[in-house]
Image 1 (cartoon, helix red, strand yellow):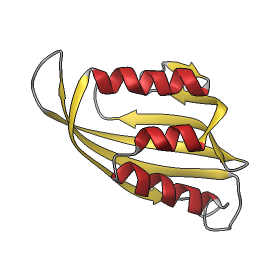
Image 2 (image 1 turned 30 degrees about the horizontal axis):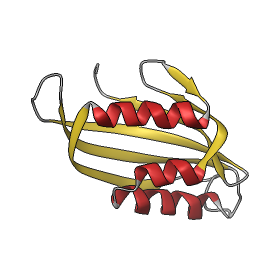
Image 3 (image 1 turned 60 degrees about the horizontal axis):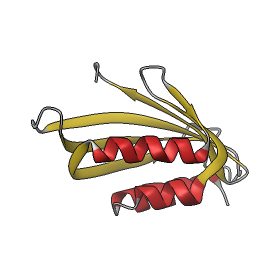
Image 4 (image 1 turned 90 degrees about the vertical axis):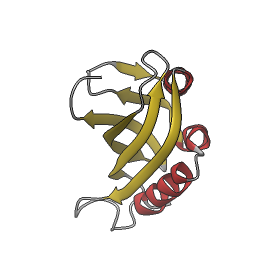
Length: 127
């Protein structure tokens, strides 16, 4: 499968609220997740568990995923390795504050052999 096909499926499923299905199906066993803070988590199960903890600590009222976006070398050539980016817009209410906020985050995903092997997040401001 091409990076472009995988990336489009990723966005479509996330926009249906099926984020954990994406992780289970598309993440490589040795995936590395890097937060904007520099925190790194390695391994499919630990990365998924990190996301489950975040979701448990926040009430999500809306999620919109835009993209995927590619550079000129990745995604459009039909290759099974490369990168893509997406923009997440998420309305959440953190349980710690009870105040709704809108989060925007860019995710860069690296694909090798039809699996996501790395995700790295960028966002504006401290969290």
